[in-house]
Length: 295
Image 1 (spheres, rainbow, N blue to C red):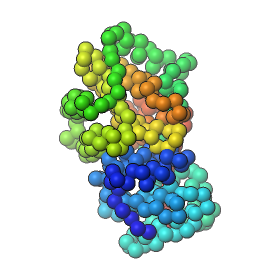
Image 2 (cartoon, rainbow, N blue to C red; image 1 turned 60 degrees about the horizontal axis):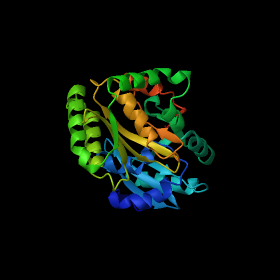
Image 3 (tube, rainbow, N blue to C red; image 1 turned 90 degrees about the horizontal axis):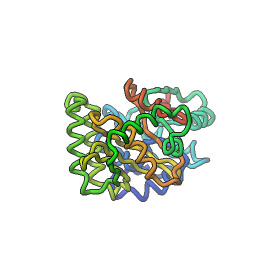
Image 4 (cartoon, rainbow, N blue to C red; image 1 turned 180 degrees about the horizontal axis):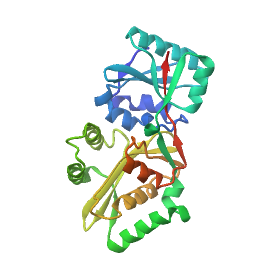
């Protein structure tokens, strides 16, 4: 397999496979792959019409794969040989339950599997987030009603390049409140976000901003994972403006094309507050992602 570094020029080649796939894993969003490549040294290879990703965790290779049906045995074998050439065990991340079953069928007894709840993706129905109908969403409607009552003249705008400097000022304020300087994960997220905001068009990112009295109090952006699933990559808001998170979430989803049936709001990383917030939006399901290790 010939691996190449992921770059902006890789988009069409990679999305030719990802956008027509049924995979809803946020890690297959090209916007994520490209904007996080600084951290993981992400590389890709296309073999037998399958996408193989190789990246590095603590200096050791790990793989993800988007397989065409029927090619699993030969592709996995090539990944195994690539890992062996590097003197490392084969570790495959982002393994779905279906792929787990396929690995057990094609390679019985070869893999052990680990499932970490902290890295499960939260998948929602776009229509539910856009309408918030029903008793289960009454608390969310209450948040929106309070926001509208407090800020009746609020505005929502699509994220454009001229709005990025003010978004970054809000993000700087958010970082001061959340200790970005002390938290490596937040520093990495910040670097990824700055890259994405500076390459909106190249990454085919769509975002939105929420304004109160002409000032941006929240912003968000995301990109397509496949033909029916949209990934929300980042969402930041001024917590001093009550209800700003709820409103930017609501407005953003309502400005997405209805062709996207599902919204992926990514993992909670085991952060209690984040888990509570994501669960409060009543996910349609949690997308489990296993690690498969060749033993």
